Length: 104
Image 1: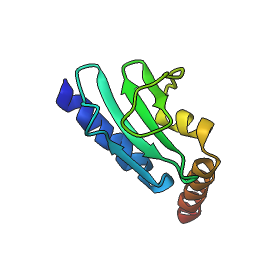
Image 2: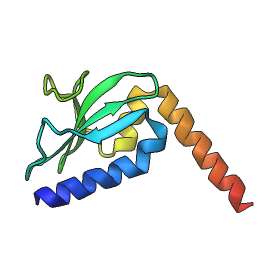
Image 3: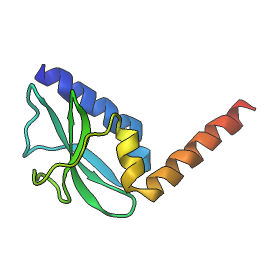
Image 4: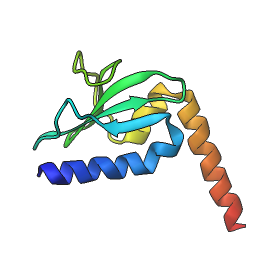
């Protein structure tokens, strides 16, 4: 189960890495059978510790490798990022427009 969480985490990172400054699986907060923790830096240079579990994604702190007061869960990493990062929204939207233009 731990390896599955690690693999899921790696897939999430690969999917959004172009739209954030930095995202990596935490080395200090170990992946376990309950989920995985990420260190995330938005394009606004805001830092977060994010938890991914069967319940979804949530912010656990406004710093790396920290579990403080965790927020409500989001179903997807996209909805979480959309709620905290205007520049994520712009970057994701621009990438979508570029892909649509390639289809034409």
